[in-house]
Image (cartoon, rainbow, N blue to C red; front, side, top):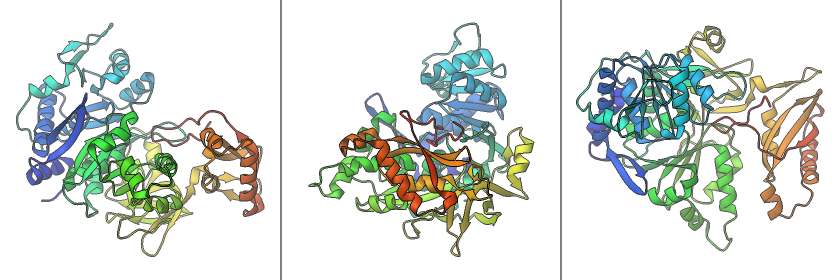
Length: 510
């Protein structure tokens, strides 16, 4: 069957995989599951519930950690013609209220972990007609001065069981995803059904039906939703939901995933723990203990990954597939595959994507490129030219269509002599030393400065008494291989972590 919408993916997977588990997750200490058939039924019940509240084709926001209810709300909204607005559960309540108002949201689905944000929204978001609590057992009204109805998610589904169908325009907006950029105000990326569905299904990664995966990344990010959830459902995976970042190790052993998605920062910390295991243990046994015994593949994206880390994980029997993308491209632009993997690249362009380089910047075009930024026409015009998306990344594409990224255009340091320096290039060199936990390279007073947050735990373990002296020696060594204009002339140490986005990227304007 043709797949043009996310409803097509739900229908296809329900028909093909039927009573196979689609999701497994913990409720308290008990593992529960929902089949592909049950997922379709629950999503249609949510759609019927929206219809009953007069919310069809409205904007529905959802906030919370990854959960089955979160996923049901997403599909129930978009597959009935509505627009989903996934929100970052880590944002302050006032910031969330601002995004709810900017996105013209009519209803908020929330996890009680962010009850504070829901209570604030009830007072500060006049566009809301109701809220839906994932934990409430009965319907009620919001606390405080607001009389806004708060509905029970479970009751919402139970009261609206039955079939639901709607004609969908694949090219109409169905999602607004707010970017968590490292600079500037967040922008609402408008994506269509075709954007997301094409990104999920256009590449056959040869992952067998029934492969067990586990979600670890924040679900409001396009990378997690498209690859973990949407693609997982299309290929018939068993998707296990990690209930807390504190329980990752325990859940690895419980669910025994074969494939996971990670960002480089997390991979670096995992490798540090693998490396610290007793040397007498074979590496494949160390990996088995750490990952539950069945992990074969890690897909990495979101930031630069040191190629050496790919080789190191291979020593433990784990294949790392580095990819590249951005929310504005739904999000995957390129990826390496097990049988087509150029270490050092960020992968081969997806079949539905083409690229070109304009003034050293990578531009991409294809069916996954966004519709634009919600209510931001000037920003949209600056980001799109005749359907070509300006990625903001510096890089190139080789003769085999593999993509290489060298830095961010807006982060370029332009020196007095006109020379351009990519801070990421120097940061990646510094990150090779385990003592460097976090680093930010920037211009300060017409010279290049590196600000480093050192790994004190590593320093104690290796008995490094003078951390600053060790890091200065590292900088001096790196400077030897650089032209004069690229040398780091100032080293600054900090005793706290840098502020980061929810995707763990360091905010550069600090």
